[in-house]
Image 1 (spheres, rainbow, N blue to C red):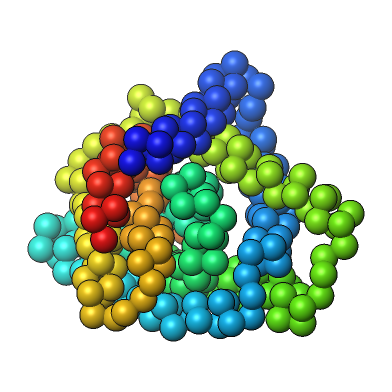
Image 2 (cartoon, rainbow, N blue to C red):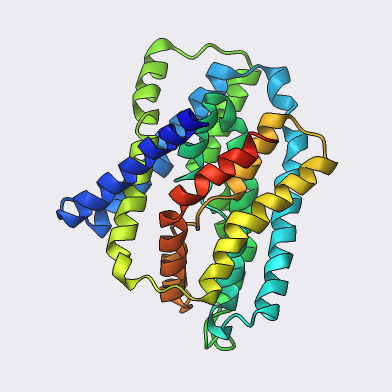
Length: 315
């Protein structure tokens, strides 16, 4: 467990580098946008493509999809739990929808992928992606709808949701890279050496750039501006207690490989999505609450991860 924690600590040191270089004014908010685009549109697609073509056979991969039922049911149950929680603990009306979304959906790529790679290595990536597919689908459909409901002028406002927009978000370049790699692997085509070398150089950018983005976001939202309240405590309980607990309970009922369940638990116990403050601003929701939830969930993760690792190794 110590080795895994040290690997995670190294990853978070990259986040602190991003924070420090933002403080030194090397990085700006615009830099975070550029890095995000590089990761999501270039580095991550090659990462997914090469992981599938390098590490899996047809039979191994087809056996994965039975496990997708766990993230589907766990996220829907977590969403229902958030509705009950916000009613029982009187979550502020202007942030109820945002609360539900960040209680339910986790940061499966920018933090989830590097953390799982640090703990389990490349063999975890297909399971990471299965959870990512479900998480992203729910986030860009139900999640966006709930955030939009926080608009004080919701009766006059139009919720900017369209099935084609949602499909574009779900079928992101990362997922397309995965699907192309899947087709390549199923057809048993050998990846040319120069493509593999080029792809590996780009894929290696995924972890450092992802963590730089988180560091930049935390800096520019300002640690001093983070305000802890009972609703943020509720978000932290949702992210770090209820969500992974529901995954574990479903894993006792639905038989899946141990590694798959461990990865799903790690993915369920991730910090808040880093796009939440931007979306809250766009939909006239409580941006301060969204930014504070993101900041606290990221900063507390290093204190939380040793406990999570202890639980994971008991699964």
